[in-house]
Image (cartoon, rainbow, N blue to C red; front, side, top):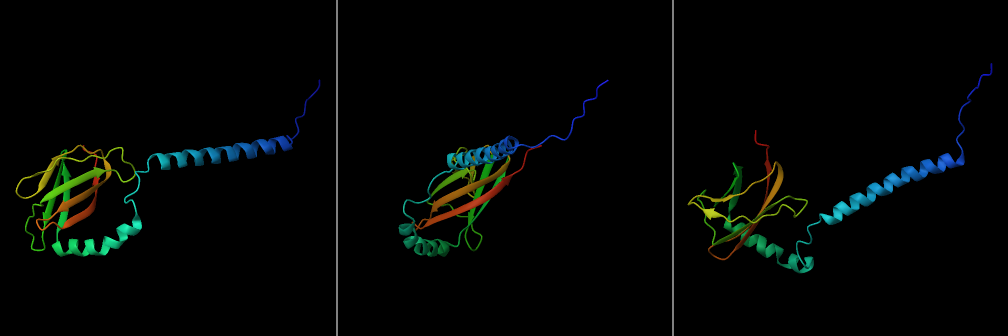
Length: 159
């Protein structure tokens, strides 16, 4: 009777090369996928020329702060509510208002709902999936002062 004894397998140069190729192949593939995802979901530039925008920033900020407006947001049952108040707590109806609701990382879910003012607050019918959302408000006062604010909300899953 003959017994075959298998000794320890030897690692050759081909085994080492295959290991390195496999490991770096995974790393490179993941990097390419992540770079593609980052580029394909980038919403774009906020301003065309940041230098020119910075020249007007302080003037716009001071004018906006002079309004002493506070904006609060609420979301319930497929409806978003925006309330604008002044420093005394009085409700404000802006001369014009534009709202962008979307995700922070992509423009895929962006929407501009049509707001209506009910005498105390603005409201719009909007369906938001659970998770983080941003609300970008661009309003104009009766004295033609621009007011811009970004509000973040978290929508919980409805049970």
